[in-house]
Image (cartoon, rainbow, N blue to C red; front, side, top):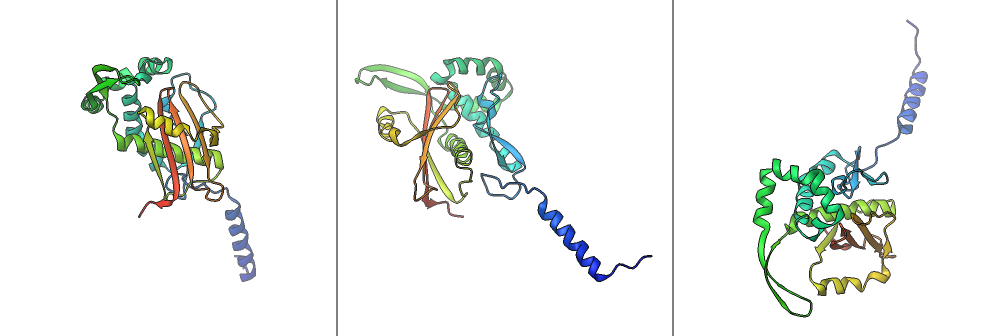
Length: 240
């Protein structure tokens, strides 16, 4: 057997190390920071689009757990808001025909959640005229905001080409009252239009603080009707 000197062993080892270093590394998950963002997550969820789906959907690197772990929240979000005025839009009608009626038929747990969310409320016009009691749906606040907060992290990565640290808290809110909408509209001149939009399905505006780039503001519209406001703040970190 041919003898291999220690010098050659060192050179061979160095060559292997350099070859390994040159291999493309998986990006980190944009949601949790895990080192293996080996899947591509759609932002917003692909299930929010009727078929045929656009060819320019946003995707971001994500670990398998973050990619698949929010599916039930996303299904509930979609199912809930399709019982609002969003459900009678062109997009809403397509989603009902293509998937939602089958989803309700198969998923008993989802049907029960939706049924428990239906409440009678007192309706008045902006002028204060009483319209009587109507049946309305009350979204699951925690789970719907969880969906929106994940979308914001994905959009942040898409727009700024860097992840928002998992330690930075995102606070979001579903805008329902005219006073809430008026308050957020004051910030409109400061916000940029999203680099991509799909009218009637998903649109957003955003910006971030120049000297505090982890601080950002987002206004997101789903299905032309449902509006959420979200902010990220470097001063409100999530405690581990």
